[in-house]
Image (cartoon, rainbow, N blue to C red; front, side, top):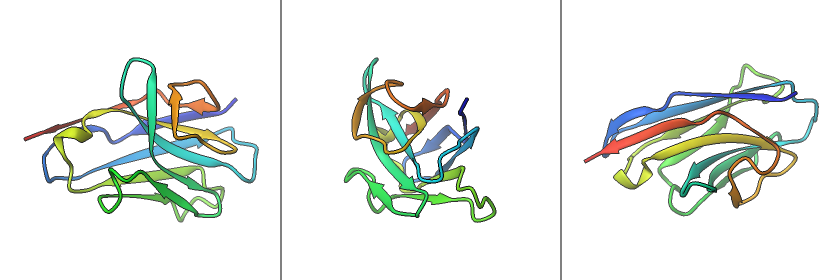
Length: 126
């Protein structure tokens, strides 16, 4: 079974930075994608950023230019992904989940596909 573990959430001031980490284990596919979602409502999660094993990255317009997704260069299996969150806004406050699948999707019911981590809270204050 695939297990995803997030870490790095917490509190920051507006304009500050946080870095989220997602460590995946048990992945058997050579080609997959890991995405970072924010929970908007009780059931809806929206994709903020994702990265494929070939390094191709996606950013939602809301985070483009502020967030950077990357793979751990020391992990040849591309199972560890980071989300560097800079220039944080109060509106970035949410629970963030990482999810893995062959391909991830933009707006989903949280946990409805692939494998998901337990979530990490990000709180940005003004």
